[in-house]
Amino acid sequence: PAATGSHEPQSPFMGALCPRRAHAGGAAMEGPSDGCSATSGVGNKATPRVLSSGGTVRDPDGLLAFFRGTGKDNRGRTLEMMRELDHNAMEVIHDYIQWFFPTDEVSRFNMNAPMLSPEIQRVFVEDPALQQQLRLNLAKFCDFLGLELKRGAGKEIAVGIGPHFQERVEDCWVGMYGGNHNWLRISRVLMCLGRCGMPEEQQAFHACLEELHKQGVNCDSAIIHWRQRAKTVPAFSE
Image 1 (cartoon, rainbow, N blue to C red):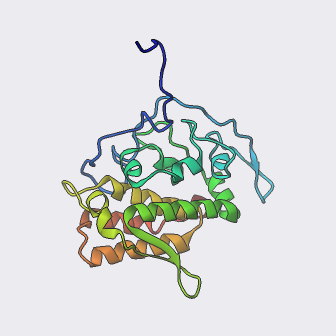
Image 2 (cartoon, one colour):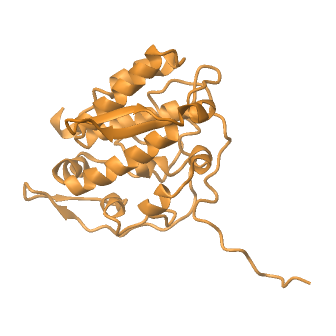
């Protein structure tokens, strides 16, 4: 007989699963499927960072350490672990996206979501290495959507439709009751890029969304919100 009291090791992504298909709703705010609350995990003991202006920034969630590869999220996951998720895992796990693309809005559905304060936004704006990590996240998310992040002949950032786009339509581009939880995630991405001072990536992503809408992707309920989020800039410059 099997020994009693033994347990299989659990993945740090367990406990973060929500129903596969989204609730209806607009794309400007997080929806129930954009981030389910995680109830346990480990936090980062973050030390204040020095800004170029001479001040310090408070980072209670350890967001900067997480993006620099020296910290973990509240569930013990690293950024590299999140980048290893396959498409199915990215679809059904809902508490990684707030770490992948942090914003300064309080999540209504993930109480452990990190906060991208104006001070932390400034650190991202001033640190090309942090922006590169966010750019890698964008490439991963674009691939999940069936898109491609690339550089044009003049080295400008561009986002286009990928060769696997049709494989991703059912999960990412079909609305149920007028919405799709991945459209809510897209709103988050546009806002994050703006807050972190990455307008080139933000506008390239938005331009591709407009092209998809033009080509007939029925995302009418979301496109108006995406247009607003594409205007986002760092909070300290507003």
